[in-house]
Image 1 (spheres, rainbow, N blue to C red):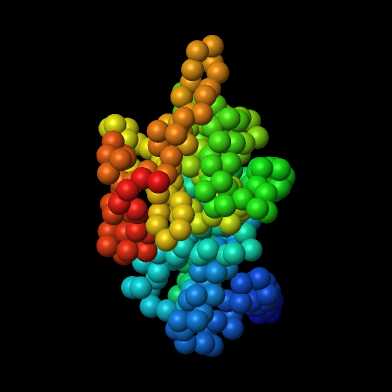
Image 2 (image 1 turned 60 degrees about the horizontal axis):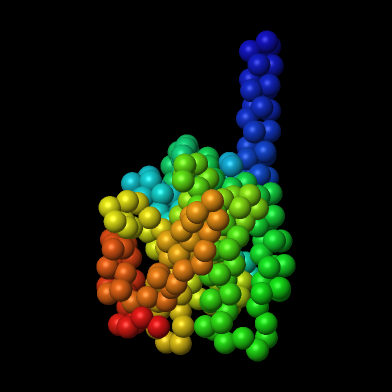
Amino acid sequence: MRKFQIFLILLGGFLLAGLYMEQKYGVVSAYLKGDMSEAERQEYVLELHDKMCEKQKYITLVYRGSKAEMQEFVQDSINEAFLIDDPKTSSDYDYMHFVHKASHINMSGVGNVYTVTYEMEYLENDEQTKKVDKRIKKIIKDIIKKDMSDYEKIKAVHDYIVDHVEYDTSTSYNTPYYALVEGTSACQGYATLLYKMMTEAGIPCRVITGNAKGQLHAWNIVKLGKKWYNIDATWDDPVGAFGKTSVRYRYFLKSDADLSDHVRDEEYTNVEFTNAYPVALKSY
């Protein structure tokens, strides 16, 4: 009798656990389905993207498919999430990519159904990004006027950043939040902030990483007309005498030839990228 009672308790616990997993993650019903379709794989990536935009630390999703393909898919899904450019926000795409610090993935399951838990680390938390968003919307309203040309918009954003951000020589601070709210950052903060402000101003923009004079560096390309141009707001913001800064245009709307001291990382030099973002042969 006692063994039967223990069996019932264990069975009840198993059923309750199954009900919880079904309600929270849909794990039980997943066993009744086959491998994920292409549309379901895209939904998986989109859900991961949305939760990363919210800066969720722990993200749990359900994968259905072969174990052999699982590890590659769940890892590639992070990179796929970075490539989503939702026009309703400037906090994904390059912004999300460069405020993401690291990912740790745990996978468990049997058969063709696995629970995948991502433990995310971010350089900015959700509250900080919201503060950046709020501040940028006000700044763009102040510095961008309806009758401005795209060139004038690009220059206004460039000049604002150079005027209001001081380079952090310790490189301890390297995010848009520190650049905009605290007023100091290293190059990645400059470049990611410029990306976000240009996007909010309606100017296509990307963040580029690589080396500049032998050091790791980040800068931008922006689209003006039908071509793309390099902008390095960090290097246009030299620290002058008595800690003051001055605006320069030495690295403003430049061709690759006129930015020869900057060498891109390989992902920004492949044929697919260079065809999608053709840089002007001459500086503006």
